[in-house]
Length: 477
Image (cartoon, rainbow, N blue to C red):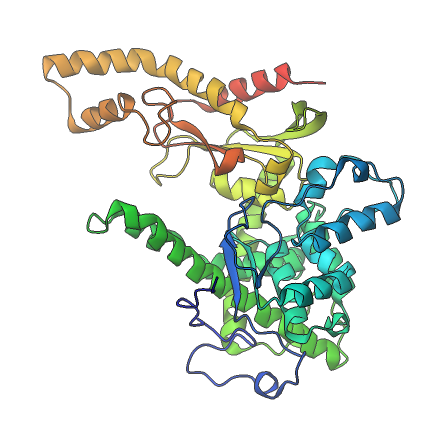
C-alpha cells in the first residue's frame, strides 16, 4: 500500500521554518546528516484513539492507533523494571503509544514512571530502531488535532527513521522527553504567563495558535458550500485539517532543529526556560512565535483567573474494564472564554483522569453553550457519554412550555421568522444522532470524550451546575 504524497508540498521548510521563496538558514542547507530532521513524510492522519489498521506497513504510528493492550500477566508490575518492560513490549508490538498501558495498568510502583509517546522514544530508542529496521519504516504519523506529545514523538521517531541509529538522538533527548511527559500528564503548574511562554508547552501553544487559526474558517466554508456534494465534504475537510496540521508539524520540527543546532554550538537548552535569542530561527518562524506568544499570554492571563476559582468535585467512575476509580470534576460555572478553550487549557494543568466542565451560555459567537470533556486518550479508560442524558432531560424540561407556545403560534399563523426557525430545530431529529429527542442540543462526540451543547441550549448557569453536581452526587466515593 503506497503513501499518498499529493498534499506533501511544504508550507514552510520542514527543517528551518523558512517560507517558500526565502533563503534557507545557512545551517539548514549545510547541516550534516543527523543535525536536522525533515518533516517530509510526516503526517497527522490517524484520529485520537483511532485505528491504525489502514496505515501502510512502512508508516509508523505514534501516540495513537488503537493501542496494544498488555496481557493480564503484565498488568500488575512490581518493580520499575517491570514497568519499563511494558513500554518495550508495546514498541515491539508495532505502535509507539502509551494509552494501552494507561488503560489497563492502574497502579505502578512509586519508583516507576508513566511515559508519554515522546518519552517512550527518548527512553527506548533501541527498540524503536529495531522496529524501524524490521518493517523498513519510511514515514511517521501522529494523530489529528496534534498535541505536543504526538509531534515530539513524530520528530524523534523521524530522526531514527533517517539515521537508523539510536545514538543520533539529540543530547537533550532525556530532558525533552521529561518536559513533554510533564505536559502530557498534566503536571505543568506554572501560572505566570511570561514564564509559561518560554516553557516547551508554551512554545507549542504559541505556534499552534497561529498555525491552525485559519483552519476553522476554511473547514466551515466547505461544510456551508452547497455546490460541494455532501459525500465529498468529509474528505475535503480532512485535507484542510491535514494541511494546517502539517504546517504546525513543520514549524515544530524547525524549532527542534534549531535547538539541536544550538546544543551542538555549546548552548544550554532548558525546556523550562527557553532563550529564544539563543536559537537561530528563521525570520518567519520567529515572527510566528512572537505573534503566538502574545496570543498565549493573553489567553492564559484570563484562564489563570478562572482556573483558580474553578470548583473541584471528587467523584467515582467505572472504567471500561469494570473497575472503580476516583477522578476529579473541574467545573467552570460561567467562563468568559470559550468552553473549548477552557477544556483544552485545563488539560495541560490537570491529571488525565480529570473531567472538565465549562459553561458560557447562549451567545452571538455561535459557539457551544457548554462543553464537558476529558482528554481523548482517557477514552481508553472511561468515557463521559453518561452526561448526555441528564443534560438533555433538563433541556427538555425547560423547552416543553416554550415549545407548546410556539406550536400555538404556528396554528394561529403568528410565528415570526426566528420563532419558525426555533420551532424547526426543536421538532427535528439530529441527523446521525436520531436516538436523541427532538431538539435535544447536547450530544456526546469524539467517541465520548466531549459532551457539547449547541447554541440552542436553554440551561442557565444555575441549571447547568445543578445537573452536573447531581451526577457528581450519584457517583461520589
